[in-house]
Image (cartoon, rainbow, N blue to C red; front, top):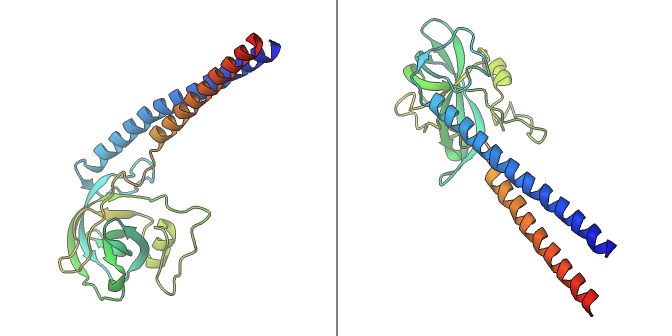
Length: 225
């Protein structure tokens, strides 16, 4: 009897823990959806002039309008686009009409277009300020000589191209005929796995409940036999 009570208490405590974890993930899901909605609203907002001293946190995703020229030089970031395949993001220096020099993410080219010369010159565009968080302990160092990067490392790229540590991701083609397809900023890369986590915890709780019921039935049958 003591063994049964011990297992029942242990089982109910475990069930309560699993259910609480599931509820917590549901709450986190609501929080994340609210965060994503605010980011999406900011991304699609009305563009402003490039801030004098943009902040990587406060101004992340801020829409801006630029006028100036695409300067010489490209950095190629290895990416893969769904339904398109592997290729590169093309990062170029952009010189604004008021003399600033920043990084511009012009978009995607397929792998075979890496060596193709692309036009430079005057351009006006709308884009979003961005400081991508793409580097972790597994990210390889860039092959600077071969011009193959594995993440958009804004400070290092700015040093290589001689620009401010500021990046704008273009919403539309920057120069017609360049063959570069824009990859605008969106929320697709922001993880939101809370629903999957919640389902996992609630599923484990259901399985745990079955185990408790089976054990109690067998214990009862044992006592009655």
